[in-house]
Length: 182
Image (cartoon, rainbow, N blue to C red; front, side, top):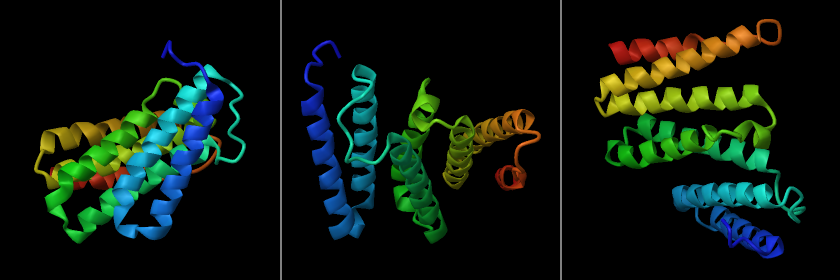
């Protein structure tokens, strides 16, 4: 990162990446995963740019919070749709997609970019829940249990800190846990 010199050039590169992604989205629906992987690169580029320049010239781009939330939600949606279709041939690919989502959410300063710790926790819970379903499908029951247990732990921590704020339904995670046991 020491060679970082021109934030305007980086902002232009990110803008170009957004345009390429938008073109993929509008022209090629079958290229959803490559488009998501491009979005992941955009998010990390955004983060690096912001780390080196707190006020980068990115006025025409969506806020990084929205990029992160959209990426995580799309990755989870695609992985779960593949499970519903019984698409077991590409389980490794969807496992990697969810792992990328989780890696992003586990960044130490992710709350700074999303601005809502509760939302980050909910996205982690969603991702770990879905990852446990993939592991169950792959017959990796021990890993599935550890993954779902981590989701339960996150939910319990969130419930302790948000007792008076809003209702949160922990039942789906326990249903997933029961499914792994079965």
